[in-house]
Image (cartoon, rainbow, N blue to C red; front, side):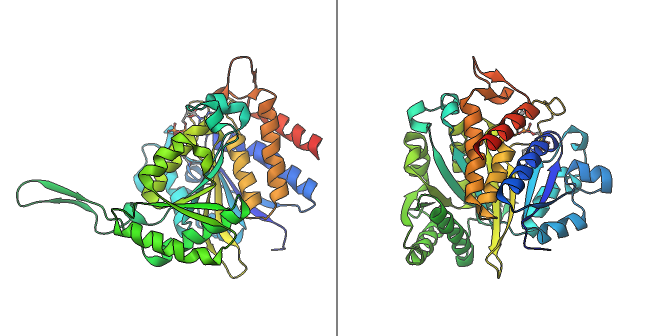
Length: 368
Ligand code: NAD
């Protein structure tokens, strides 16, 4: 493969395939405008792969995911495949990608475009211009720790057990990813745990603190998770990058997401380890699912997936100018009042998936 950026595109099911059509147009624009053409290949995942191959991710597709610089995924799932055995459900394709690529750092930005500030459940002045990044550890902690399970006790009661466990390397690798992100953003990192009551939190805090000397340009702070939850709804703009474990990250990233309005606006990235060339395995995907209730109707908001591609430009391809241009085009289109159904407000201009793509491409062309 040449040095040109490569990306494996997995549109998936339902609106995943619809929004990806618009993303592909943005990819083509970036290729032309930046003079560094992207080599992309499209393949199947989820229900689409089940229909074609009888399983939600073909081994060849898995191999390609390793060969390409990054993966951009739409969404998987839908009623057609709901009754399949758990082991071959569409979601297993997604989980296999995350697991085999060892994507341990989940990045969930919470960005609130000015034009949508009134759609937040918080006051406009608290969220307008919000731009924070939550880095959640994705492959360890309470959701995977052993021992786990439900056992019968001699006294006739039952006991449910899950274990919060982190080894040093798991903390260090996700913290490094977060420090590096902070370097590319506002230079501030807040590490979140419960070191006041949990030994795993004490270790987390010690290991993150040790790393800080390697990143003198990043200002590190620590916060207990319960306080972080409160601060996110009290004064969210105080944060730049937050790094936290799997369980706290699950809760805090959903909380932060709702500051920004709609599911159709939320991108995400999952990153793995750096290879010898300092490149990380990465998969980018909108937070939303395949939305069977609106699939095939041309109503889906393509912005979450377009912003996921902008994250790829920033974090996998080191093309911050192109990422800025895409995010600015989205911001301008919203400021001019264009809205898909999910973010519709009174007095705004209703558009479908394709028109939203059209207006974003038009903005990109105009700004170039
Ligand atoms: P969903 O995110 O698909 O939809 C929830 C609601 O939000 C729906 O009303 C939908 O119309 C709306 N919505 C979501 N994205 C939108 C967009 N871009 N534009 C406009 N409206 C949007 O969640 P769900 O309904 O719980 O799940 C539907 C299917 O998607 C299920 O099969 C589920 O397993 C799957 N799913 C997949 C992923 C993924 O691929 N990462 C994530 C969540 C759910």
